[in-house]
Amino acid sequence: MKKYIISLALILVSPAAFSHTALLSCFDEGDGTVTCEGGFSDGSSASGVDFHLKQDGKIILSKKFNELNEVSFEKPKGDYSAVLNAGEGHEVTIKSSDIN
Image (cartoon, rainbow, N blue to C red):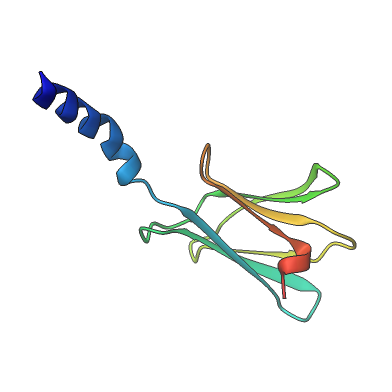
């Protein structure tokens, strides 16, 4: 019985052990635009993954990462957040104050 419970526990935990973490990096291009690069810790592509800009709690821009795992946009005035949204548990947010 103990072996059965341990085996069942390993089966249930295994998907979490093999999950990947979403990654997002953004940088100011110095010309009024920002580029963000997305991906996953296991090397998976972010191509086609949703990207949003949020300002005052509202989405002001929605795009998808391109085949190079990048999104570029004109830098909005004021504070904003860049968000990679690959679904539940796979969302990363970067505040504009952290973008250099």
